[in-house]
Image (cartoon, rainbow, N blue to C red; front, side, top):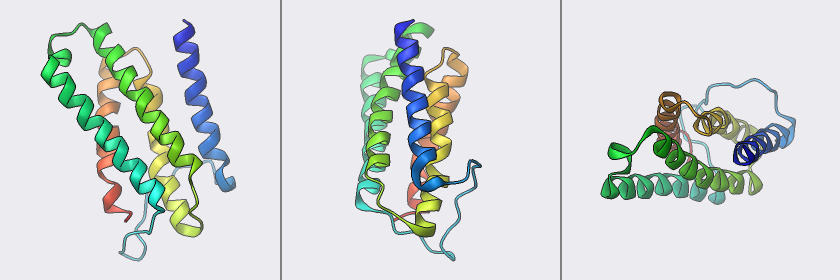
Length: 150
C-alpha cells in the first residue's frame, strides 16, 4: 500500500512539473515539425531521451537473458514493469529539470513528452494488459524523438 501511494505521488509530481513549465495550456497537441524541419532541442533533453531508450534496451536484454517476461507470473511481470518505469521516470524528471528550451521548439517538446505522463501512470498500475500496452506505446514515443528533434 505504501509503495502504491509513493508511486501515485511521484506520478502526480511529474504532472505538476510538466504542466507548470512556462504556463502551458492544459490540452495536449500533436507534435508538429518546424516547417518540415526538425526542432533544435537542448543537449540535456536529447541525452535524457537517449538514456531512456538505453534503459529500455538494457532492461529488455536482461529480461530476455533471465527469461523474466516469459516465465514469470503476472505479479512478477508487473513488479518488473514498475521497476523499469521508476528508472524511466527518474530520467524524465532530469529532462524536465534541465528544460532550457523556449519558444515554439519548447512548446513542441512538451507536446511530445506530455503523453508519456499517462503512460507512466498506467505502467504504475496493476492491469498487466494495460501496462504492456502503454510500455510499448512509451517505447514507440521514445523512438519517435528523432522524427521531431535533433
